Image (cartoon, rainbow, N blue to C red; front, side, top):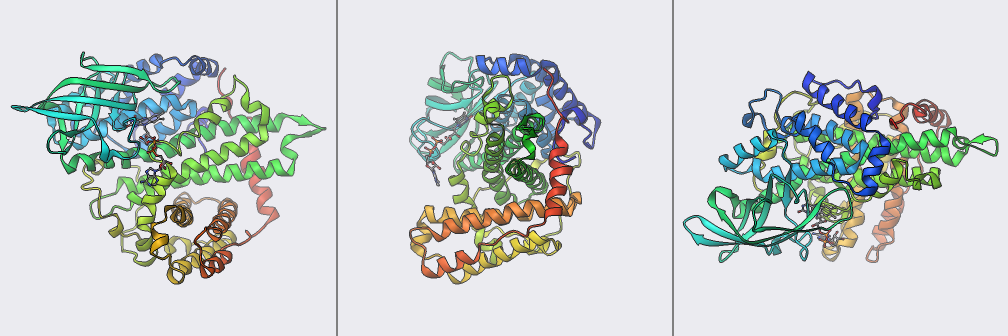
Length: 566
Ligand SMILES: Cc1cc2nc3c(=O)[nH]c(=O)nc-3n(C[C@H](O)[C@H](O)[C@H](O)COP(=O)(O)OP(=O)(O)OC[C@H]3O[C@@H](n4cnc5c(N)ncnc54)[C@H](O)[C@@H]3O)c2cc1C
């Protein structure tokens, strides 16, 4: 079973505690029931009940405290099991995921800092059921963190006052610690410090968003700070901000996977049981195709995210491949999620608007994930920096298997300076493609070869390299190649059925062709580039038997296998 089914949750875990956490969480939500989840969503109720459950069971403490800061032998920062938790909570609602996600972001600068006193306090706050917040964004500056206006003014003898405002800060209403990014007056040095929402100098101005989450606008007015509350300063503070986002952005892919999985069950149950003109909706050929494509995209999302966890867990200063794979998960898995929901919605139509469905919430929330914590554009602009080494200068790395061990992923808090991206090398992507002789994997490989030729012989000129719009098209195709590589690596580890791989690549070949048409049509594309783009357009290998197998045994087979408790 590839997709999560909370009522048949039989995943392998390397320890009992992890299984217990996942099962208890499922039980909490199934007992709460869909009606209550939807009522809370519609009335924008703060999820106190959920946070009390987290506190009672010390769930964030176990999952988010690196081993060395906890006395609990089960506590560790274990990316693999955090993926599982991400998937489960978003399956029940993005709001439950968001408060966990911003806790992760808030903890990033803390676990990365050398301030041992704060780390011990953070571990204690987690034990006591605390949530955390990440105060990076400001209203006027968006992604441009270099222009931060929050200021720490030195007052001598290790004392400062903080002044300024932050905007869009999740959990800013009651986080035990708000990791706040600022500049130091006079020097312009960056710094991260801890703010406490209970102090009178911390003004909680409003919830910027109309949702169950509290996405705070807060202001600090002569807020007193001492060296003891400063986490990091100088360039390291900037690297801390970027490295925290590096870790956090990966989770957005899992949120999309959880949302799409629940929505998929609702959609197939509805369509397969609905009879129109004397036939089931799922008997329409176009409905079959939409469901099959949505399923393939969803399975691919999960395979890619799972494989990326292995690279994140084994990362080191000498192996920073995760810095490409993480933005691929962020940008591609989340936008695929949007595609999945659109296809499902095209099928279930009016049903997707009904207030009692999970789908109504999914259709709204899925759109947040490609746009927040870095848009698709910001991530593609990052991804293209890796393209040259990926295709033309591969390195040698030991083969990485499935990493499910019970260990704390310490490197994530010691990532070093977030620079030198263009120098990072990758293993040769052809290695995994060559291990499959499957019709559509072969067609996809032909498309990759043409793209590589495009880069080598119709190389973008200096003007095109500066044109982010042109780079977006190149970046989409490059991302698709990396996506295919990661998916095949996971498919091999899981010994996935060949027919399913073939059907997934049927979708991928069509996507490749679509992006090639976009590249062809770019304002600045040259005749040589246009000719090369056209050669990338290929038809997937059709196979009726394979298609029927996937439809019958994978897609339609999900009908009535999961319904959430009322
Ligand atoms: C619900 C919600 C929760 C949030 N939670 C938090 C939180 O807890 N903590 C926090 O600090 N922030 C949070 N944010 C802020 C969020 O991460 C913002 O998206 C971020 O600050 C960027 O600002 P912006 O979205 O206004 O886009 P802008 O930065 O204003 O971007 C505008 C456009 O320019 C493009 N662009 C910008 N830079 C580049 C680039 N380098 N390359 C290519 N294109 C670029 C973008 O793609 C976009 O299309 C949250 C926002 C929301 C809505």
